[in-house]
Image 1 (cartoon, rainbow, N blue to C red):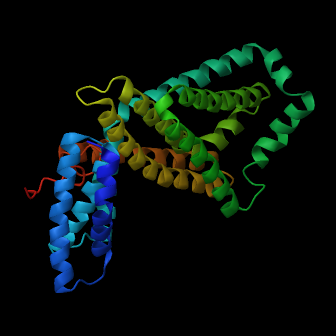
Image 2 (cartoon, one colour; image 1 turned 90 degrees about the vertical axis):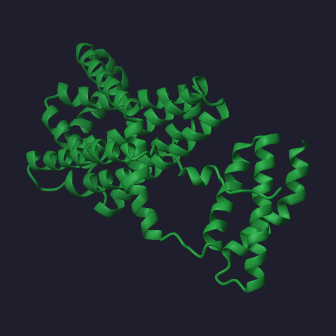
Image 3 (cartoon, rainbow, N blue to C red; image 1 turned 135 degrees about the horizontal axis):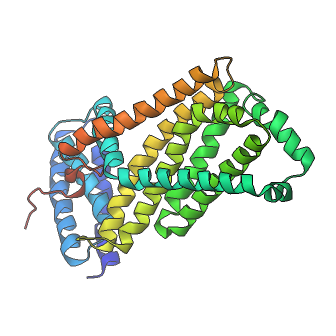
Length: 331
């Protein structure tokens, strides 16, 4: 079957159904037309699935049919209920299902940072080849600490959030290729190790960790989470399991989109901590305690709420009725 010709022949009907679904009020004639178009489009979807499977087109028509079915039944999904369902079920289920990918990324990068810092401390010549003595002096005595207070807190929070979102976006966008994710993770870990080793060598190790840990626990978890999910995207087409490569990649792509929304919230929280808590006058123990509390809350959300959501049958993907419309179709 010529899919392009089939789509061209029926696109107007799909557009008309979408227009009826979006109307605030329907007349009797409009309601009858909506039901008739619903049946036709359901048939179109069935034909496309059996003759020429196209995941993106199937998802588009399934979503259209789900909205039309809700409209025809006279029901509307509450926006707040949908938001609540996202944070209570879909997001935590996705984070829990993919936990070994991103927890593994956290563990590997922590090991890389530790090994690099130890190696750099034993090879001071490397440090001297990267920065001049004057640059090292400015970094140790001024630049590192001033970085957290040179801008207003609100502006700094926005700057930090934008930078971390960009790093996370790269991991998710290039995740299907695999190697770019590893490169981004390596650069991130190397930057942390180099600065940490320089600060430690010059007697400012306590200051370094005191400024990094309050926001860094949650921030780095978010970045490594993006890296782990990115690698899972790559693995989806390398080892698709009992699905086709297209189906496996589509599923993990939808889950990655779910995680991306969660990352926005995580990075917003870590950005606020970095802007308002890290440079504050609170004692080091109090600042680190706030960071530990934020990280603990996130892990509890994943392991408690996520585990419960998975036990109820959620996996972080779209609801089954949005992916597979099962209503009877006309002959």
